[in-house]
Image 1 (spheres, rainbow, N blue to C red):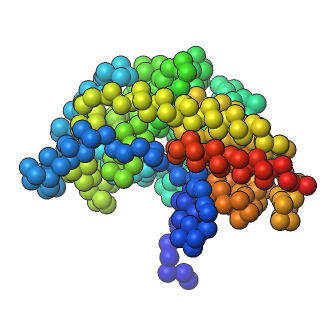
Image 2 (image 1 turned 60 degrees about the vertical axis):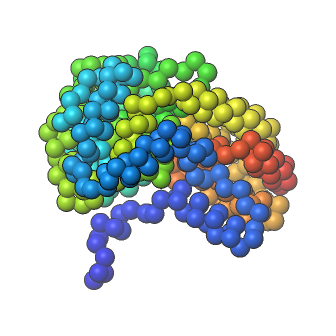
Image 3 (image 1 turned 120 degrees about the vertical axis):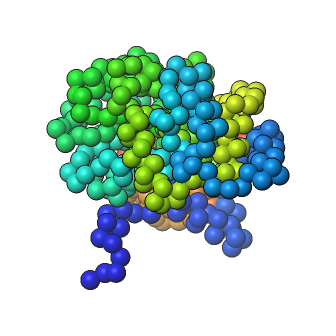
Length: 400
């Protein structure tokens, strides 16, 4: 009998982390590698946020805090939800954790029983299904293809709901596609949920502030207040504030659910870093002047990548509404052979050959539950993106 838990056999390591790690290893070996796998802004954390952390250190604010977040940060989160989303929460309805991933993990651990189903629109962030499996639940992917803009329809949601459904995990703008749901599209989904009162909604709003053109962000409990009592609205400071390494995620929802999540966190990691929490207070309460500049830079990069990838034979790249990813289809490349003789029978084979033959690291679509595609993170400079897209185009031009 294996020493390791049987539960562990149900999950796999994160493919995005694996691609990023491999790219770093190849680069360390002297290879000319361009890594487009990591979902991490290349901007530095704004100075006012860094200064707040330094001030906290100098003031000796380096002790334990309440297990799921200190009062000052919970107050800032409540103010953010009221100011930006029209949602009213009390501090007892707020949980703060070590990154957005822990928030989702705690909620699933606190609620799932064997046989419970969780609906997950696909393409999805790679960790959703595995966190459901770790919690003993059953992920139910709903395929949302390129023809639907990578978005789930009300009819698809209705068809996926069963008596065993406990959660819908909802992510807009999406990782990996950047697709965002308009208010009308979201209302169509919330109308379905109103007919099924046993289904709860877990939102992942991490890319709320990274939206482009005239897209207007909204979140389910904001669109349909009747869902307020069964919605966990999740967010964090990682992406919009360029604070990935600070590890602060948060959520607000029904008080009994938050208490259950607090119990899990109190017996696992306990409180997030006190220094990171003070930095997050400044991120939420302080100036937001840098956000338009961040958005403008990401939008220029998006437009560059979409244009160049659509010039590559066999690739179709839709224009995303937000985040900093594109999710092009490579249907026109499948079945062909790479310049060095690899049969590209899957998107994983495409991504592997692309890395080995051109030095460009992307994440293959099967990792996100929809093929044949790959994900590009354009959270890097325009010069690097131009070179990467040129290599991808040349690679596709030489397929046979």
